[in-house]
Length: 319
Length: 273
Image 1 (tube, rainbow over the protein chains, first blue to last red):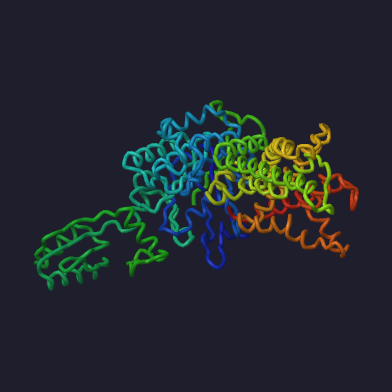
Image 2 (image 1 turned 180 degrees about the horizontal axis):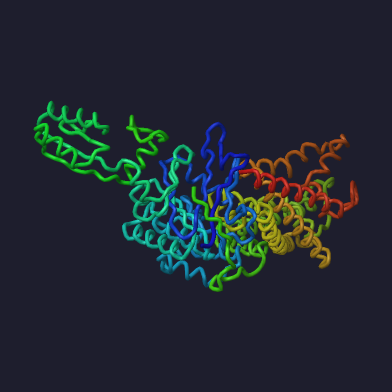
């Protein structure tokens, strides 16, 4: 257990950032613990990047404070030794080589220059890639360079904003391994993503935000179990009989929703009970499938109310 | 909400302790950044070319004025130092572009976010840039003085003088002036952020406004113009005693530079990067 990141409320209100009339981050109050990967999940425009930028002292909070190990980022003398970060915009000058970029960073924080070659190696960038100018880096290489920069000071706190963006499958696997390793070493690792499947594979803890508000702060397993689990999909060729089955199940307290032309989704009843009841009522079934909740589903339900750019009506019975 | 409020343990032995203070580091980083992009070299080259061309042109004018048919305007024998200083009216823009670029290029490319993550103190970051820009433009100013003298001397021929101490003094004054103006540009750019706006304000403050104020018959306006940074610098370099001593001129210019830096720092602290 080494360092932690806190978003501290001021006057009972959490970390808040307003841009003109829009509230990007709205009253976040949370602690991010060391030794595990914390996933920072939310739809595009939910306020993830703004939150990270406030932790890094780039944006000034409208209210509240983001603290790293009890101190605001702007008060850190050698911040690269405390916090490493990969932002979505990598921040490399198009006419500067990746190596020179890292050297400038290293010099600014009194890091020996041999560490530059070390982190280039850690990030899987060979000498040729490191000598390329910023403008000729592919998105994947730029991401790797950003990660190399984050690791420069061997910091106990790491913030990765959408790290898998632009990476090939090898790179994605590498990021997963890296975040797990870093957390395993006792560091605080916060990884943002709008990809729930990605979080399911790497995160231990999840912070879910929508429209700048904290929707959930819970272990991944708990989030999956809590919502949308124990549903059963039933299909059959007799619409009338199937409807009767649905009514019986609803009467027993289950939530029944139509699924396609010939099916029902039943939440709140076990598959055994649904099968027994169908037998009892003489309903012919073609399918009886227990549906386990996925994080994707949990996420959709959690953020259904807060999607910035909703494509249409989304069911939101979980909230 | 989980709340593991652990106290951070001492830094493990494997992690390197930062060498040097944060300000030294910031200066070193700015130095590395300046010399790792080619545009710096292009800017310097442009400065040398503008100085050579302007000094050559002014030297031709001076020589011609002495030999043409108009007896009313004969500058007589001039020093190459005065040609060098006269050439700065134009050459200074190539030099202050260096101060300008250190900020605008960071905002244009997003590297400002990297810079501020490395050096989160806005004042420290700006001061580090100021130190690097001041040192580089001062040394470059000395070089420009040499270039101007080397071009002007042969062109002037018999109409030119090259007193060693005087020429060195002029080059030194030019270098001090250029360093102060470049840092002024740096501070102003940090405050205004955009290259076009900053350049417009600089052109107005260094040239257009004081030039239009300097009406020979209206003393009040001339006195106001004397307070402007460019005019103060000119009085300093010319070694004037009127309207104020040369030392007051350089102090006035330095005051403008410090004010621009303070303005830039205030803007950086308030603004989201």
